[in-house]
Image (tube, rainbow, N blue to C red; front, side, top):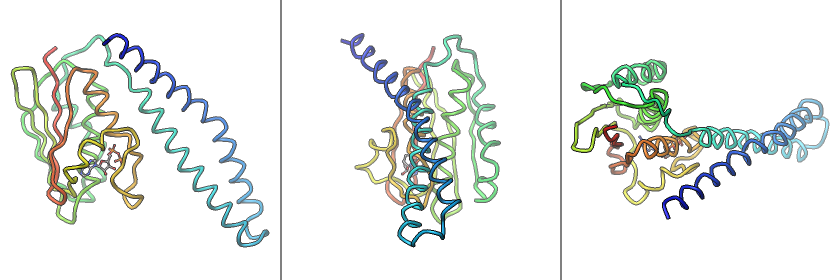
Length: 229
Ligand code: ADP
């Protein structure tokens, strides 16, 4: 049954990857054509025509972002089979360096406790931390962001956590957010809803688990486990 399930999953993964790839071409055509229409004819047709053109430009832009998000999800593969010992501290520092502008603009305080050396795929681990720390910043409340990154050793391997004092998540919605394209926030906070689905894929393919503990308005703690190799 496990083999059958794995096979079906692979098929589904290939299908979504091909579908996303194949959607890119026609979508590019729609975007180019409608952008041309907007540039060439805006103001020359009546107001309703201008509004329709505007709607199509926006919808094509949104669809482009969705397709890109699906491709990123589909391209997140198995961890590199030649796993190396990776200093998690350095991975987290690299993710923080990438988020430097947001960290500075929000005057965030980041507490990074002692982090271990683990066997992992470094680029996937980087993506995992970058998504989770990025979200901790993005879904901040009016309070100054405080983010704590911690690792504790367990009998099965390591338990990592990323805590924030941000907007939090209602208990009944905690499982939904790991599904591809699922968002709890509107366009006022930009995003594609794919980041946590990628995190889940990375963690589960390493044999671990990811979950969140949170209360709306009280901040969130995302946990993930990485079993010993
Ligand atoms: P995105 O951030 O692009 O919307 P994600 O998959 O990273 O996509 O997150 C899915 C949803 O989970 C977000 O839209 C947001 O509603 C919620 N979320 C994620 N991280 C946090 C967080 N640290 N605090 C509050 N809500 C969060």
